[in-house]
Length: 103
Figure 1 (tube, one colour):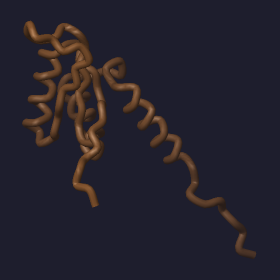
Figure 2 (cartoon, one colour; figure 1 turned 30 degrees about the vertical axis):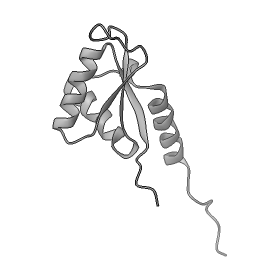
Figure 3 (cartoon, helix red, strand yellow; figure 1 turned 180 degrees about the horizontal axis):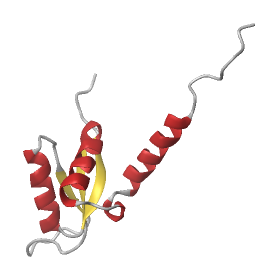
């Protein structure tokens, strides 16, 4: 069995400096976090949006922490996280088995 973790992008920060601050806050809360910059800069911090990544099993907690601590809104949530939350809500509304009449 592989011990490799699957990392997922769960939120987008407006720039690299903000992303680094958010990751620092998450790490202080015990959540692993990495930045994924689509436009790396060799001249200093990137002014472009950056995605924050966390192990899949920690991504929901990471998003909750940011929502609670910095009042993060839905515009920052990654598309993948929104889709995953939507699937979870739909699956939660489904009954596991149809009810049957035992008689």
